[in-house]
Length: 252
Image 1 (cartoon, one colour):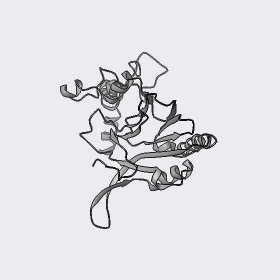
Image 2 (tube, rainbow, N blue to C red):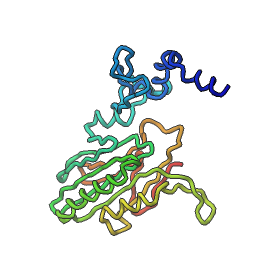
Image 3 (spheres, helix red, strand yellow):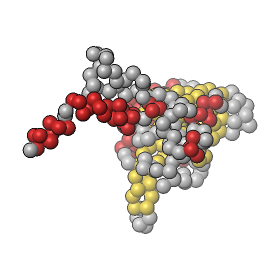
Image 4 (cartoon, rainbow, N blue to C red):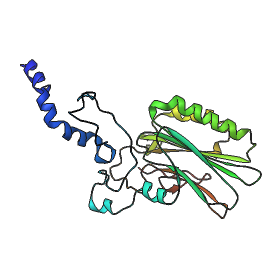
């Protein structure tokens, strides 16, 4: 009987009838290449899917309701503003002169870890660096950060400040209060070591929730560096400004 049940689920005609539905469920319209599955293409096995990442679009199926449809996403807002956007398993940087306005950001972390570093130099120039890596890229993430900070160190920076945004989990502190802590402290510690930044006051760790169901499209697990014309520099975690002299406010 068990064999009959298994064979019924493996019936090819059943898979063929439901294949398009499965694609819609697992991929979402915004991340599906129209030609991923083609019965007429003998080179493409019906059980093999090529998953690709695409930039969000106005027709994205990730929009859940009419209100969300009318609300611009973080990507849409920052792309139109000329912000340098960093994707998953990527890194990037921008350099600004005194009085210049620029932004660099990443978004949609969803279980990934991102790092933002602001370096200032004696001539008044500033450098904003962001990297965004999945858990599978932990080793590469550390090596990339080490290379970036090694190059910065050669330029004798006046200051360097870093924010690590990583998946968190709820834990009880010694007083019995529920707080958000990094899911992998080892990952955080490794990034701090690789950065070469020794002053704890110049480092902030932001553990974020990966189970939020009401996460709006403005924040989208975002990390951003903003350089303003007045010389002020801010780092934002999920659109909350980081204050290095205060505890980070963690959304739970």
